[in-house]
Length: 163
Image (cartoon, rainbow, N blue to C red; front, side, top):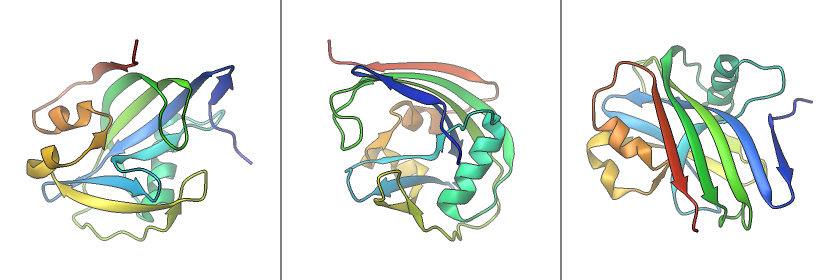
């Protein structure tokens, strides 16, 4: 059994995550689940002794049922928030995530049948990038990122903690 790189101490939660930016035909692939009213990026916790590159490929396959290849590392994201969702309620959350741009496969066909760690059904959604402002998507930087051009690796810090 593999363990994610993360821990909870008192009312603090830390997580190391690998995530994918998957774009096909002008649409981005995002995930929704039965408990939350927003979408989020494909990805998950990096396991102990696992490279982030291997983690993102594993997570994408687990969640979508499709094999994607990495194009490049796009974003290093430091994320801080006060938990108020079904999974993080009451916790001070700190996440380091590496976002990888994946190579397009030329098809939106997936074979997903994914569950969250809490056994809630996850569903995949292709959202047209030009309509992305009509959706609530986390991380919040993703909307602006997708609507502009990028070439290198970006370091983004998001601090949504309520003081």
